[in-house]
Amino acid sequence: MNNAFEVWRDLQKTYLKYIDTGLPIKYKKLEEERKQLLVETDAISKKPIIELIPRYEEYITLSDACDKLGLNKSFAAFANAGLFPSRDGVESKIYKHQFDSLKAVIINKQHIIATTGTGSGKTECFLFPLLYSILQEKIGHPNLGQYALRGLILYPLNALAEDQMRRLRRSLSSETAIEYLNKEMYGKRITFGRYTGITPLSGKETDGKKKQLRHEKEELTRDWVSAKKQSASKNNPDYLYDLPNMDAGVNAELWDRWTMQKTPPDVLITNYSMLNIMLMRKHEENIFESTKQWLKSNTENVFHLVIDELHSYRGTSGTEVAYLVRLLLMRLGLTPDSPQVRFLCSSASMKESERAKKFVCGFFGLKADQYAEKFKIIQDENQTAQSGFNSQKLDRN
Image (cartoon, rainbow, N blue to C red):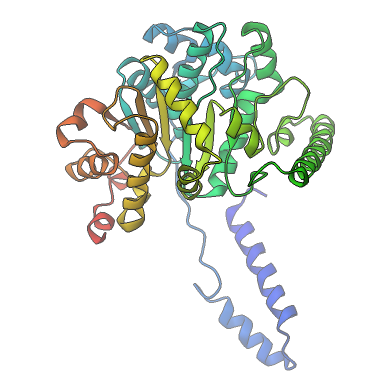
């Protein structure tokens, strides 16, 4: 069903039926009166709000972008295997703001804030430079064996982290991605993992918990086999991205805490509550210490911190997260103005302004005169004043 208003009406009818069934009234007339009250606007639902999304103009292919920027074209081939696949045999084109993000981070060594609208591919704005940097390191170091966080993706909610996991599975552990890495990268992997409250298992490695972990692995394997059958029968690979790829020899997604504690993944996805806990506990100490040693081993190594919905970190809670970012950098032996850190952010409600400048510098602990040099606001030509930074909300906080 593609009609938003029909979906809304069906949901409203279903909810009203639930109320009539769960809270029956003996007298039919009273029941009808109640229904009339409930169907009034704002009683149990609002009418759909339709947002008209402008069509974003495609710019150039990723191969052409690599040529234009002087980047390694193997990244375009890698992206085509899962991150940014071709459509109907024709290489997909990126948007101008995605090109600008890649240029700002990789070429100009800047932090970015992608402020483009809904459906504009903001995720690629940080995934392109993040994965390009990791891929280049693995290409340049044939015997690479240092476990460290090359990128940390920070989300305010677990639901957003789950959505990102689907994207990373398609990009890094799908059949086509693994096939490319086996052929072109001699079996190297870009590893990733989700570290949240639902990630098994917490605490020490006792015999009882090891048995529990084996049981978890058996369940995941059964679910994976079932998902593969479903995907094959429906001819739809989307069924494969809701859980880790459990095929032998893949080893791209680290799905349990103990493995990530011993061998930190290249990309870690978490939320700020869990990050706060991780920074205080001994269990996760090796994750940060290994990353710190990796950064010290080569000044060219860069740690990427991805922060989604940057504008939402306001007021008291925003201050807490800002100090958490400072604590993380300190733990890694970095400072906010270090050349070995890149802040890759997204926000659908921020634009260039003095208020935005003050907010960004305050959040990351930078001086005001560093803003113009270090930060690049990534916008698109379709943006209007409606996407401007919400100064009223900032003023209230």
